Image 1 (spheres, rainbow, N blue to C red):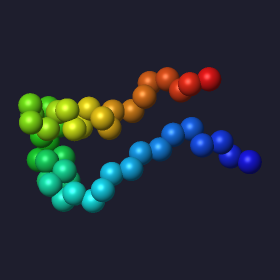
Image 2 (image 1 turned 180 degrees about the vertical axis):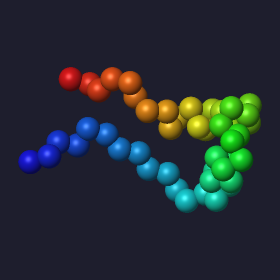
Image 3 (image 1 turned 135 degrees about the vertical axis):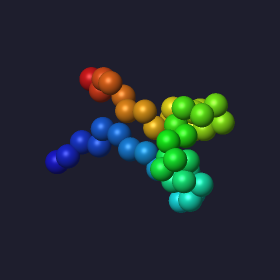
Image 4 (image 1 turned 180 degrees about the horizontal axis):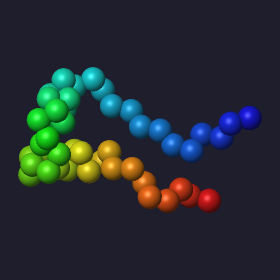
Length: 45
């Protein structure tokens, strides 16, 4: 049996896709949102 180790969900918001496509991940207005999608570097044991 598989063990679920993580997951993420986001509502469909076209504006987020537009910001990503235009490289706005580091823009002060968008950075807090995109910071929430950064991958973990370690897994819990």
